[in-house]
Structure formats: structure tokens, C-alpha cells
Image (cartoon, rainbow, N blue to C red; front, side, top):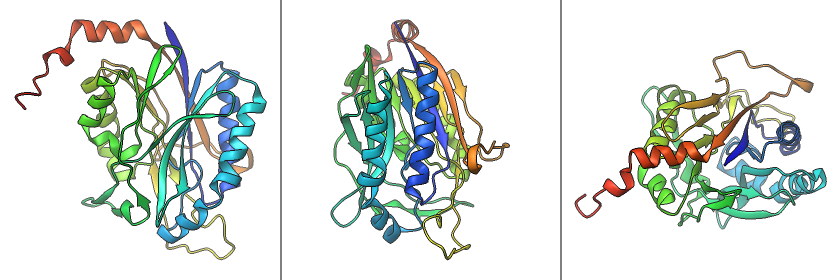
Length: 294
């Protein structure tokens, strides 16, 4: 049993309509290759300047991004599911959401990011995601697509092995963490974390990534050149043995600008359930775990 997947990489800005157009282009490419699932990054809908800006933009996501995307998926009459990261309004802050959409344009499951990126990276950024984002409080059950159970996470969740193990214990065969890694953490940890979580959980790991320098002023006429944000990129697909099946370019490589200076990339892989079963049979780590001891 196999399933073909596509992973789209882009460089979202603060212009929601622009980001929607790029997402739809990636959907068309994935469908043209008969991909059963298209994985898109965290914050596909927008990258903002700050917490206040994010809260403002989130009010428009449903009408300007999500509803049109659902309609495009429905109208395409294809057979491709879409995994996508978006922001939705919360109480005082926004919710960082991971949605899984079926080919009929219906959201079949959603996950709200639990672990928030509040860090001070040496020689890197100081980030406090909790200033703008409300944390989720629960893991969601993996969703079955053609016999492959898909477990949802988001970005910083990948640093928590217990999160991956919990999804594996809930029946996951595939873990996916749509992301917007910083250049520092991406350079040092991105591939390492992706492969480690695949090995820990004996699942396929599929990580769609933001890549490049984001125009966080795209929605305004007067630009603030002091605000810059760059994402690492290198979207990646890893098998349960930790082997990299496919990867996109990262921000240091030459990124090809396409129509109207849009940047996007896409990678593909065929996931084979027999490969997963073989890894789990030959090295039954779940049976060997001793949670009663540690």
C-alpha cells in the first residue's frame, strides 16, 4: 500500500490574497502529479510584523484565505487532501492552527499549536510566540487517509519527542509539522529534528516549510525597513528509518522566482506502508519501552 504526497514550500507575506494565489498554484501542481495529499507550511495565510498586526490580519483569514481555498479545492474536483497552517481569531490572541481539508473542500480535523516558541537563541532571535498566540491544550487523533493515519503537529512541537510518541501510540503512521523555522535553528537543527522524530516514532515525517525573506509590509504603503524576518526552508520528507526521501532548497540556496516574482517550490515522494511495517517489526521499540521505569 502506497500513497503519493507533495510538500509545498513558499514565502508568505502579510498580503493574504497573494499567499492564497501561491497556495492555489501549489495545489494545481500537486494535483497534476496525482498527489493524494499536499502539505503546506505553518502560517501559509500570512506572516505578520508583530502581535498587534497578527491579530488584525487574523480577522480576515476566514473570508480572504480559508473560504476561497476551500472553494478552490472543491471546484477543482480533484482527489487531493490539503494540510495547511493558518491563523484564526482567539480570545485576546490568535490561534495557530493546522487544518486538514478533504478533496470536497471540507475541514476534516484541526489542531491548535500546543508548544509555543518562547526562546532566546544564542546568536539568533529572541522570540515570544505567546505574546500573539493562544496555546492549544490537546493532541488530536490521527486521521485516516487511504490507510495512512496522519498525526498533526506544528513547528516547535517537533522538539518534543513525547508528543510524537503520543501520536504514534494513537495509531499514527505519518507525522507532519508545518513550520517556519528561523535561519539559526534551521541550520543547526531542522534536518536533525526531522530525522530524529521519524526514528523515535518509526513514522514518516513530512515537514512543509516557509523559506526566504518575508515581506511583512506587503499590506501597507509605508514600509518599515527595520522589520525583517527570514525563514530557513528546506521542506523535507523522511521515512521511518530516518532516511531523507526528498528535500527542497533552503534560504541560502538560489531560490527561483516564478510568475510575478512569486517564490514557491514543491517536492514529492511515495510513501510505502510495507517500509514502515518492516522497520517496526525488525526493531519493535514500542514493545521495548519501559514507561513504568522512566
